Length: 106
Image 1 (cartoon, rainbow, N blue to C red):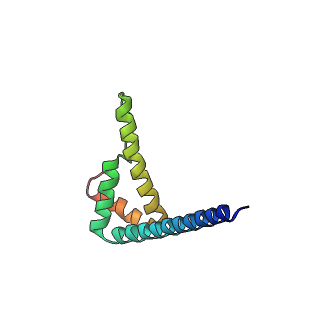
Image 2 (image 1 turned 45 degrees about the vertical axis):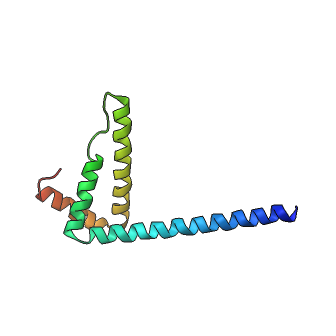
Image 3 (image 1 turned 90 degrees about the horizontal axis):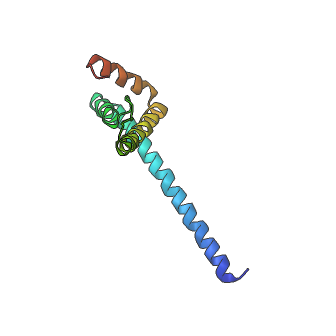
C-alpha cells in the first residue's frame, strides 16, 4: 500500500473518530437539556405542548398524501422527543401526564 493511501486511510479514520465524538457530545447535551426542561412545571408544560403540536397523540392520516406525509414527519419529531423523555425522565414524564390531565389537555 502506498504512503498516500495509508495517509488517506488514517485521515479518514481520524475524521470518523472526531465525528463520532461530536455525535456523542451532542447526544449528551440533548439528554442534559431534556432533563433540565422536565425538572420544572413550566418545562414539562412546554414539552407537553410540543408533543401535542407534533401530533403524537393523534393520527397522522389525511386523505391528501402530501398532508399525511407532512403530518407523519411532524409526528416522528414528537415521537423522538417522547422517547428521549421516557428514557431519561420517566418520573417527570408521569408528572407531566398528570399535569396535562389536571389542566384538561388530552
